[in-house]
Image 1 (cartoon, rainbow, N blue to C red):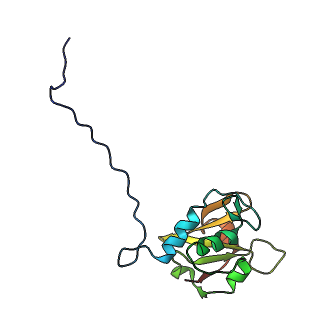
Image 2: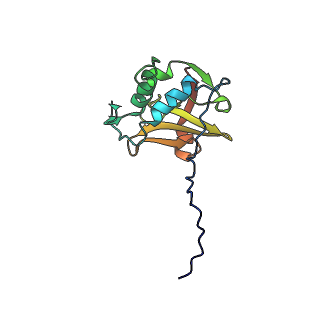
Image 3: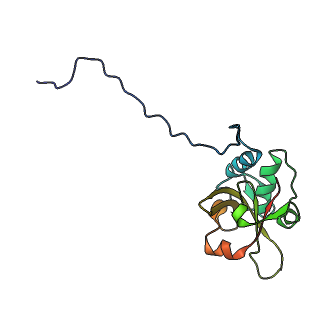
Length: 157
């Protein structure tokens, strides 16, 4: 039998895990907005439940309220009450941690849905929210349904 191997001891190297760079402020520490977004993203995949604020089920404003509350930031419980807080900003100035407000029904002439901006890349805004059909998900504002339902962006931090 012929061997093509060496008599030297073999060393196996493990490939390093991919490091995901997190948004940080100038000093390199995560911002409050980053922490709130991370908290909200931890609920990704949770089913929709009207009035819900736990991993057993959440509605859109429950998700936002809970993510802020877990980071010791007080924010109202409903999307309509949240809409009354903060100040208006243009979509060109939206950044991670801002809130997006939507009107998804024809019945009422007011806000009934809210999402939290998770990222802005090349003008494409992604936000986390809870939908009755898919639960807690991250969506692009470029999707036609959400672009049409969009009302206003607000900054509360």
